[in-house]
Image (cartoon, rainbow, N blue to C red; front, side, top):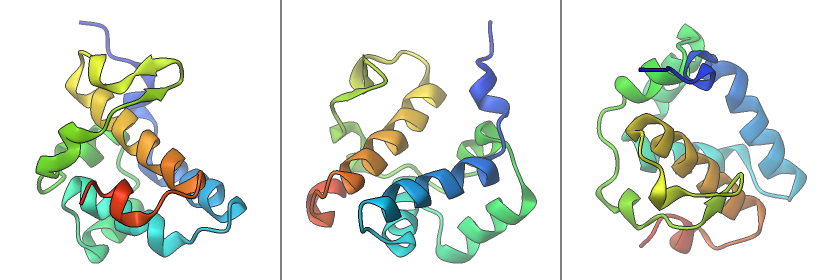
Amino acid sequence: MHKHRIFAIKFASVYPLYVQKAERKNRTKKEVDQIICWLTGYDQAGLQRQIGQENDIETFFAQAPAMHPNSSLIRGVVCGIRVEDIEDPLMRKIRYLDKLIDELAKGKAMEKILRQ
């Protein structure tokens, strides 16, 4: 099976881009971290450890303690593709995170982003 090249990108290289996107829209790094921790089950120390270890995105998600049970409620379009229609489980998780960061940058309330 073909492995998408995004799986090999270091999470530590993508993370600052998420933070920059949020900060450009007057949101915070803390909010980005909250979203990532909510989705993946990492605590703050675990997230920082993953960034420090420079694991690739595939490893980052493989080692995630637990995807949030409400992550299946994430719907919408990222990069022209509906996230709920993505077949590959890893790619779907990546796009879930992209979608949540997009919602943060668009000014959505945290309660709605975190599907509470």
